[in-house]
Length: 66
Image (cartoon, rainbow, N blue to C red; front, top):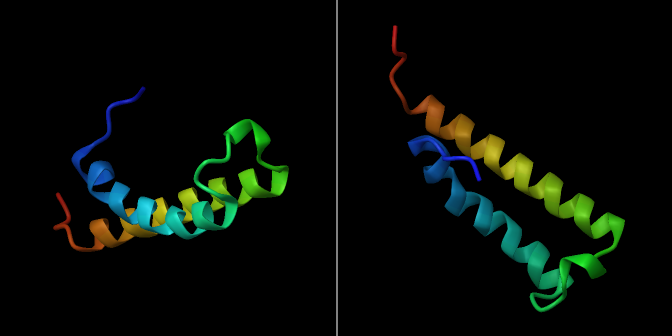
């Protein structure tokens, strides 16, 4: 597992909030091996989009380091 930066760690709650509705739809007790290709695609896209959006928000609040 890779160590996250401070900003990446700050972004994780937003990712979890974005994933929760998808997991509710799929079912929290359903094993990953039983997910359809569409379900996996939706989880991955939701994760990446939420992470990117939150990282952009965090970056917009930071001072430029140069």
